[in-house]
Length: 163
Image (cartoon, one colour):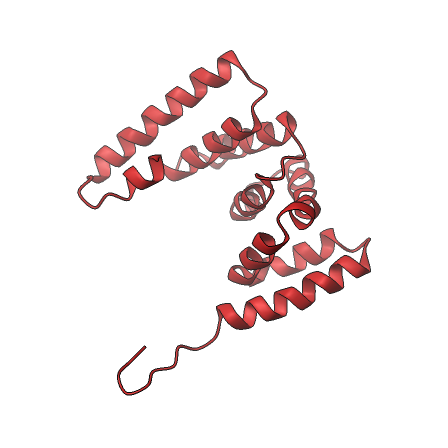
């Protein structure tokens, strides 16, 4: 609902920022009442990222999301993506938490992980690293990745003016 609202072309940048800031305050209030909510912590990380708050604030919420629930099947690929976006800023602890989300994403959101990685090919070595203890899983991922990468990066063909 919030994302749909923020994509409204009639909404000014100031209104978008105000909406995100209000959402951050509401999420923080909720977390002060119930801090063991991995979904809310991840939402907070994305909200902070949306208005370019410091990477440390984004990473703090990211880490707390994982601490609140390390294995959350629905959050795994989102966590992988957020961690990858912040990779240069992650401390050692956050990097370890992040890399351990990849096998969880493999287990519960395989197709989403493959599609995300095909969209972000520079992530492939990290996925392979996280699956190195299971050559079979690594081979399955690589096969699926090759297909997804080809599909995602296929040149657009035009025929007589049609795309």
